[in-house]
Image (cartoon, rainbow, N blue to C red):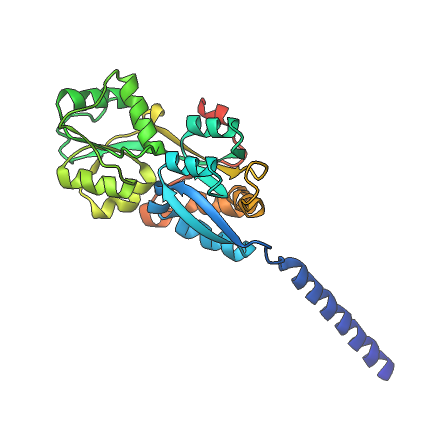
Length: 286
C-alpha cells in the first residue's frame, strides 16, 4: 500500500509540475520597452473603437499605448518625422506616399466602413437619393451650409476629392472649415443646421448628441478603408518597432478582428466597422 501511495504522490507531483509549466508557457514575458505611441484618426477614438481594442491589447501583451488622435494627414506626418511607432489611418493615397518615402513599412488592410453625408432632418438641399457628387452640386448651387473638417484628415481628403470630381471649388459664406475632429465638426454642423461628410462609425456614436440625420449613403465612392503601418525602425532608430508590430499583429489577429467586427452591434444594431484581415485593396476596386 505504501508503494502505491508513493507512486500516486509521484504522479500528482509530476502532473502539478506539468500544469505549472503550461501556465508559465502561456504567460508572455513582459516587453522590454512597454510604451507604444499610436498615431491615429479622430474617428477611431470618437467612435469608441479604441476603448475596446486598447485594453484587450494591453492586457494580452503588457504594452501600454499612448494614443494621439488627429487627422490622417497629421497622423501620417508624425510617422514621417519618427514621432510615433505605429499608424492607424484612412487616407489610402497619402498612405502609399509615406510608404514609398521609406518612413513606414508593412502597410496592411485592417477594416472598413463608409462615409455618409448628414444634415438637417428636413434636407433643405434635397440631396436624398442622389450620388455624392450630385449632392455636393445641389448644396453648392443652393448655397446651403456645408461644414468641412478642414483638418487634412482622411475624411477631409475624401471631401476635397469629391468637390474636385464635382468640378467645384467650395468657398463663400455657405462653406465653413471647422479645423476640427469629426465629433466636433458634427456638433458645429448640428448647431448651424448644416451638412457635413462623416464616417458612419463616428456619426452613430455621436448621434445621441446631435439632431442631424443621414441625408445620403450607399454611394460606392464613399468607401472608407483603414490601414495599419509600422514606422520604419531603419529610418528612425528610436521607434518601438517591437511594440508597433505587436499592435499591428493584434489588429489583424483573430481576437482583434472579432472585436472590430462586433463593435457597435449591441448598442447600434449594426457593426460600426467591418473586419478585413486577409483582404486586398483590389477587392475594393483600389
